[in-house]
Image 1 (cartoon, rainbow, N blue to C red):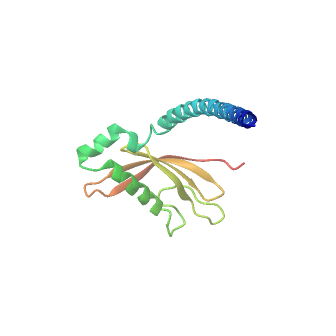
Image 2: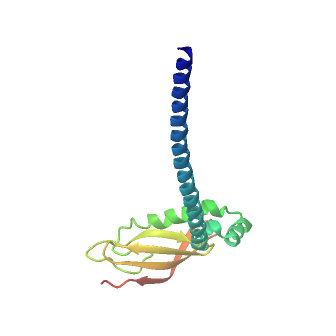
Image 3: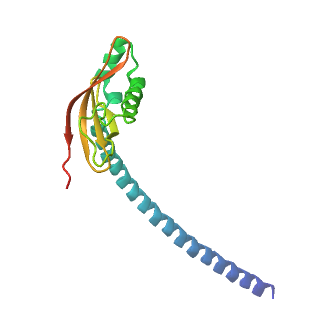
Length: 167
């Protein structure tokens, strides 16, 4: 009787161990499959990140905050170029609130009584700005020269502009 109990106990233990082993094997294979997929995706993401970093560097090339030569120019003048960039943008955006029919800097007239306003402004270096403008119907771009006078007041001069044709 005692031998049968031990035999049944041994068989029951063996079946439990076999079940646990088979279940663990399936779990480990699933984890291994997921790990391989994650490693493959990681390489794809690293490659994508490298491409995007290169593109960002290319796009950021003409940018005051990335141009060491332009920042050195401002340092020689005793001006913090990084802090100047938002001041320049704010000065140009404040020109969007004009009362007359003509924009102070954009040499075109809006359509249908709408006013042309700056949408996007990028400070390229210590002298030039490129800006995008629109009234919702027509749009264009312009190159702006800027300078600081003796009182550190900003002065702007439109160098060139273009207006995209309506389709």
